Amino acid sequence: DQQVKQNSPSLSVQEGRISILNCDYTNSMFDYFLWYKKYPAEGPTFLISISSIKDKNEDGRFTVFLNKSAKHLSLHIVPSQPGDSAVYFCAATRNQFYFGTGTSLTVIP
Amino acid sequence: DTAVSQTPKYLVTQMGNDKSIKCEQNLGHDTMYWYKQDSKKFLKIMFSYNNKELIINETVPNRFSPKSPDKAHLNLHINSLELGDSAVYFCASSQGGTGGWETQYFGPGTRLLVL
Image (cartoon, rainbow over all chains, first blue to last red; front, side):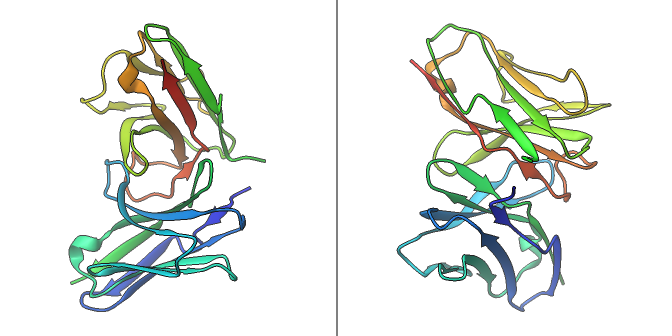
């Protein structure tokens, strides 16, 4: 059973607009959440993370929001750039990692 | 049912030993992968494999070898284990492709500790 879910396999956004990638989880014991970015033929690279004691973490154009009551995580990219086109994985962890299945983001110039 | 499973979850062994980690997927996918997570955050692809092609990351030492007895399994064999091999290893699978834009399902990871 998938404990971390990304229900949108793909997303297309115009350059300069906001990209919002969503992630839901089922286990309320997770204490740390991460987003990874993956280009074709490469492994996922770490992007941004958030601890369960926070509800927001920001790093440049990337902001992660955590809604613990809804067990929902989102990644906002503002403004979106063509180089952001990639597959984005969310992950949650307590003692081990659980990955979502990824959302393919295409930023249209 | 777990989509991608790995055994064992934890593996503690001595330097110089040979060990294997098993991966099985019940999704009917035809491509499987091995990743190494060598810190808390970073994942590096080691291999991708489908029925036709094995793609090896050139930075992976030849002590590491994937073995696929059938389409649903991709096991990772490691010879002459070294301290630096200590990491979490993730298996993943996808339908088609070789690590491009397709959806990948990850296993729970195997924590390897080499003493």
